[in-house]
Amino acid sequence: MTILVTGGAGYIGSHTVHELTDAGEQVVVLDNLSTGFRFALPAGVPLVVGDVGDRALVGSVMARHKVEAVIHFAGSIVVPESVADPLGYYLNNTVASRSLIEAAVKHGVKHFVFSSTAAVYGDQDRSPVHEDASKAPLSPYGWSKLMTEVMLRDVARAHGLKHVILRYFNVAGADPKLRTGQSTPAATHLIKLAAQTAIGLRPALQVFGTDYPTPDGTCIRDYIHVTDLARAHSSALRHLRAGGASDTFNCGYGRGSSVLEVIEAIRRVSGLSLDVEYVGRRAGDAASLIADVTRIRATLDWEPDYDNLDTIVAHALAWEIRLAANPEDPRAEQIAVA
Image 1: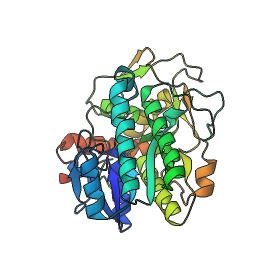
Image 2: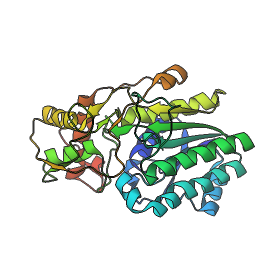
Image 3: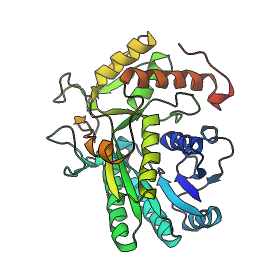
């Protein structure tokens, strides 16, 4: 039986595909390559180029590959972009997910793992944030993900589709073997942008807001290494296969770092300086988001291996150096990284 990974040529998706194939799983990837890359996939993994909202295509893939589980990453993820284009986000994230879930029910898919986000929480009075905290997204991106969570829960009651919802906090870093990493040119991830600035690909790093109610005035986030996050997906699937109940889990480390602390880590790890430009706040940004990770640690067979900001930064820097040397396929040549 096969696992369908939607958005599997993207950043988190490709890391999860490597994790699954390393474990001997059969995988098929569906990706429209709008932000994904063929080179990010392991050799021999079938790639179907198309949209997750294409009901006929998704159905044919599920039938042809005898799909028994879906891990759903495909979607748009940029918060400010969602504020400017809410209808596009509801179409690409919510409507397309509805179509995928319908196909999963029709074709007898047993297990469904959904890529959600801490953005569903919005601003919270308490930290760390528990899964049962109130949901008040600050952006259409967060709402689009929350709507899909609600659909999954309703479908589970109606049709018995077992699922796990993983709410990501801030994902960063790259595969320690440098097989894949964050490769989208327009990516807005802080650690990626800071690494690019440090190696001279950007003139300066913008810091959005210095007047938040945090110790240094900049936003605080719980940064999780992408490889640890990929392993959380495989752990979630094992949980469902073993008869575990449908559930929702925060994915983070349970502590946060501010924007300025990330910048200092980049400087410390790289030994390089980077120029910083301080600008106003962005719409949709919460002051602080730190995960309560009690539930995932107690329920899933998951322990992080890269729970260290300097390690995350070092892997992100290594990938940016490799990507800059060969953007068409960064795996084509080895780059010495300190």
